[in-house]
Length: 384
Image 1 (spheres, helix red, strand yellow):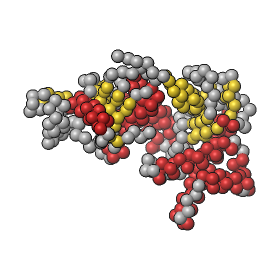
Image 2 (tube, rainbow, N blue to C red):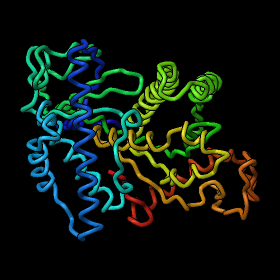
Image 3 (cartoon, one colour):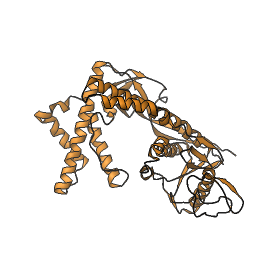
Image 4 (spheres, rainbow, N blue to C red):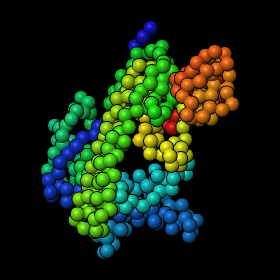
């Protein structure tokens, strides 16, 4: 039985491709460079102040530092781009420190030219949006945006982020407030066991194929890397070879992202409750035999998508403790077998029940998630 519920306001980012002319591209390149310089210098100042003086530098102090850097004769060029991206990168640095202090991320690292995605964030007072035209501060003409999908009716952008990836492609992310209509309440529930042979095994018995995006282009990628290794460092041919490698990586990432979006949307739409394992992917990739396959499966990204889409549409995502023996537990009688090597994909319990290893694990994950959610014990909270 389905019952309709209301809607709520959420923040969404809409991503588009745009094509800047040479003068805009040059101005954006200067902005990216200034953003990277300010981030690195602020990080160095905060690092030095703590390890030499045991003083924790605040964001307000870095803002005052930025004002001084703009007036310094050696760094007067910091005043050329808009002030918004420079202030935004100090906020991003503060967020990185907060995530580190709360043990959600590692210690902030320096941004390296050519190694990190160039980006700049503009707040509401640093751009204008009118009649489908968006113009950034200190630019004479609006951006040539490919509107692959329209913004919500009446949406007013509160923040835009421009970025340039290693393939030389420019993207624009527009943050707006949108109304998310909560999906009808459903009685469907599903447990999910992540894997490599099959990307996901569902408690319904369905197995979702693993497309193995990286494996499809592995030979092409290896050939491109080999050609890159043969080019002289600093040469134009090496830059072209590096761009070819980046294009292959980009195609793999685009296919993976599209597949995960389609899959996560389907799971959220069909089920009211989704139960997953709290996998320690960072530890699992230390297994060099499986690291490439685990990274290609992108379990962490799938979990992130499931969690934020569940929050949008009124669904529930439950994470079961990673140490729960879901594969070794018989979903029929509850017996836990002593050993179950990875090469055993099917097994028969002494009660007579025959199990597919992955589907059995998904059934147990669903049961454990529902049980511990009812009593509030043993479930790790979502990352959000």
